Length: 143
Image 1 (cartoon, rainbow, N blue to C red):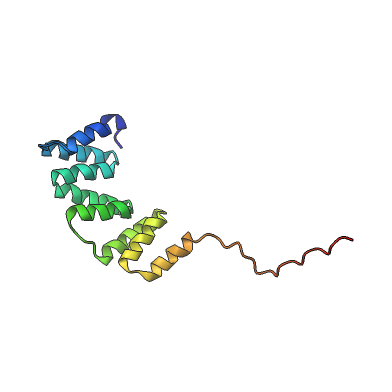
Image 2 (cartoon, rainbow, N blue to C red):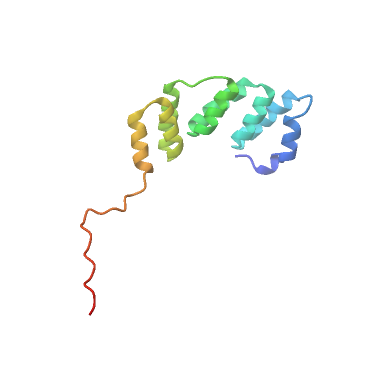
């Protein structure tokens, strides 16, 4: 990953994204640099502001590979697309493999995959503290 010293501050990002006349080439360049650095949400902001569907498509593949349901949904919204159940199921499998169980759960829910959803719910459930042994009798009162 690129070092953070090559990235810009929030103020600079805000100026770039909300300029009256957007510099599309600069937005695309920053989108590329930010995505290479792993700052995918910030990269998405730049690509979206530039109207760069190619950049957003690349990010979509990256967030799918990272099992990130939140950014996947956001990327779809920026592209004005909807995912098929198969897309959500693939994201769910990837998220589960990476140990991102909350993202996996959301993806399987949106895929309509009840069996996988139940499996993830079981993994997320806290261990039971109940025991099957009968409760103990209180000690007899002292005289």
